Image 1 (cartoon, rainbow, N blue to C red):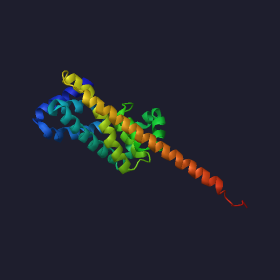
Image 2 (image 1 turned 120 degrees about the horizontal axis):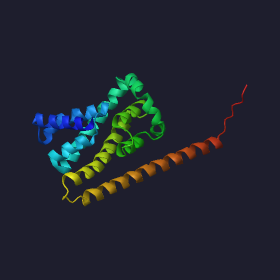
Image 3 (image 1 turned 90 degrees about the horizontal axis):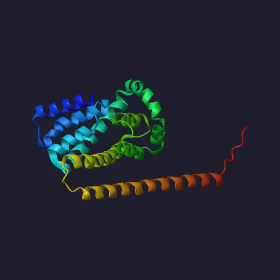
Image 4 (image 1 turned 45 degrees about the vertical axis):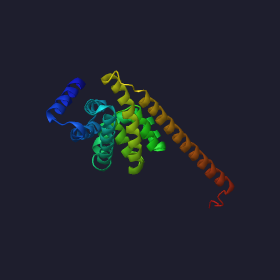
Length: 214
């Protein structure tokens, strides 16, 4: 099924006659379809972009297509297809219950992690974000960062196959630095939340309720 779908996409790209940045006119709608239904992996779109635009241009095009698709799918799930999609994904949502709980607690940071590590399909990430208390703006920035991380990682893997002689050490070092910055930022957020929680508990202890039950 997957091979047939990838063959269909390759034929569609060839038949479109699009080249250069114009390929986005085809790949952005494909990314939206992938984000809605998950018929094929997003890595297919990354490979198309890299093969046409090169490594840097292909990664940037994939980042743009992935971010647009994530935003469109989130809005469709939240405002139009909520009930239908919930019924369809109900059984699968039970398998990912712990991730839903993490989304409820960490919001955008969990979206970044799920976008980076392929533990679940893109469409399920978007739907779980739509039903979780992840508002539009946090979802947007977390999808921008998460898609960058995901596309960067898989772009490096696919680039080594398409351009085996290309020196990727600089891109790999930059990606590791990017992950380090994300880890430091997340740790800072966790520490700030923990400090704020302790402060609230301490204030509650210093100012106990004076209400007397009737």
